[in-house]
Image (cartoon, rainbow, N blue to C red; front, side):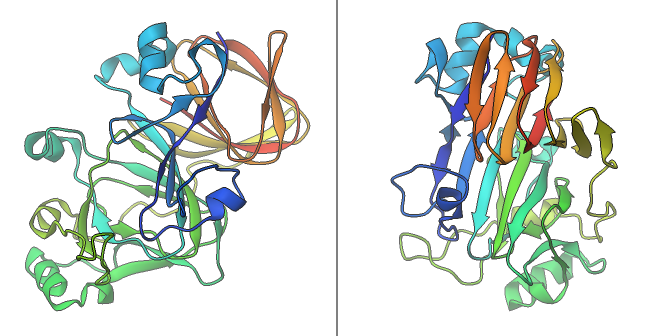
Amino acid sequence: MEPIKLIPAYKDYIWGGNLLKTKYNKISDKEIIAESWELSCHKDGQSVVANGKHEGKTLTEYIKSEGKEVLGSRSKRFKDFPIMIKLIDAKNDLSVQVHPDDAYALKHEGGFGKTEMWYILECEEGASLIYGFKRSISKEEFAERIKENTLMEVVNKVPVKKGDVFFINAGILHAIGKGIVLAEVQQNSNLTYRVYDYGRLGADNKPRDLHIEKAIEVTNLNPATRRPGAMGQPEDNEGFTRTLLSQCDYFQTEIIEVKTKALFNVNDESFVSILCLEGDTEIVYGKDIMCVQRGDSIFLPAGMGKYEITKPCTLLVTRV
């Protein structure tokens, strides 16, 4: 088994910028890159294998060819590939939105809901995002404020800085504010209910669709109870520090800061996703070496065994 370097699927949504090109080494013919889907088996955008005998195949095709064993034993409970990982460049404000949970999504949309985590990579001075409500409101007030364009008076705006962590349960109203670049780890879903979009027009010069009735049904109208922040404290190890950012039924994500070099192991319980956030480094496995630069996304198949990170870097590491 060998590490798989992935080519992301790119999205040029109207609110995006070009920092993923200039700072994170993304290459695309699109004028802007709002999102790069770094680890994705979703039908709306699939990652593509960039190396080895499966070069040119989608991640889905690679898994089909190698067998589901590469996903690990923890993925057996999922019908489909369980997670998606993105880089997001918000040059402008994203729409205010909410995601349904699995039960609602399966009943009404024929797919899964969406729980996600944000890790702030960089932001402009004064940048903020929306995370739930300031106070509890009723469905009637929610509907009325959407109608009267006063929703922003009751949402909870949170200033952000590099390294902040936000866990977004299904049902939490949220929006990324302008001037923020972040990594998102989420369920494998592209389902969003949009409730407010600042009156913007889409590429067709028409207002983008809103999904108000469904959003009112699924939104948690109380203030978010889980405070923003990493779940764990930094743990020092030989050559590296690791910090648990978030853990839920779908994923476990941590930041690993390699100071010199570090040895790790991929067991048969789960594949490992590595997203290089800072630094140029190498992955040494057996007698082979893979060069990794900032922005690279690597898939390590379950059961691959030992590998070494040989140079200082910062990695976002996710497993089921």
